[in-house]
Picture: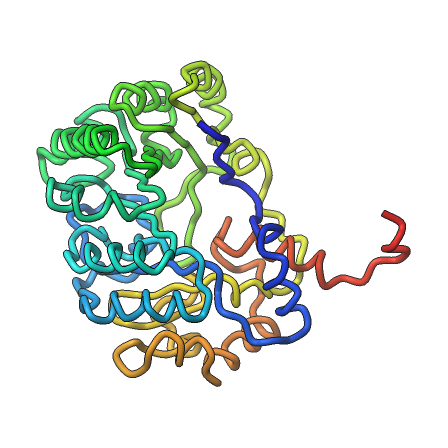
Length: 352
């Protein structure tokens, strides 16, 4: 399979929009992350929205589908269903994904796979660009300790991933299937075993990345914990072949989150939608009334993203937010690095 690009900015592939932004023109985000629900069937100890309290809520199916129409109209390129809870709790994602396929909007899904049953597989996989399943451990005992869900969740997730792989192959789908593990205190010696599990399940890749702490959460992981796993990383990468890739996000591990930029300018390119309909610039400001663009229960996505409130919030972030106090390794980090270079004036820039 072709190389998966998981580190760094991809804005070099969207230079026309970057240039419009640089000139001060109004732009739509390239990517939107949607939380179809704030409810989850698990209580993972590393959950990045743990501070929100896991209050159950669902985005209405009509809002989900109408959003796709707006995405297609204004030029949103991709949508990830993830966020606050487990997306497959909300059955409305099935017609949403199907509409996205009709409108040529790329869709992806993050899931713990426990609820990824036959109906969900058949309704979503044909319309997805990729689907990534979260496994924080390779065996039931450790899995249950970290994921903190039902006692049989591990077996259910295994069964559903196998079914998804079989459905993909049977129907010759192009969707990329993967398993992701986040390196934390409990699983840093389970990397190789988890990579082997992923390969045995038949997915296209396994990826391991570092933990990112939200300032409002208590759970934390030492920055250098990856050093205790390097030998396993090396062995895991040897499992790669023409049909399966092991991806260790080395840059993510070995580089500190050094914010070489002084302000966050990347929010116009990535937008977040929560299950209560709130539209926000990033996870740092979820539920913060000072940083909400608007709510889908009151306005359409198009109206919100091009509205005056969104402009005010974007300006406030650029002018007032201290980026050194933001969530580590945020979604906008690599985007900010790229865009800062774009807007900085360089001496002798024509001498390429």
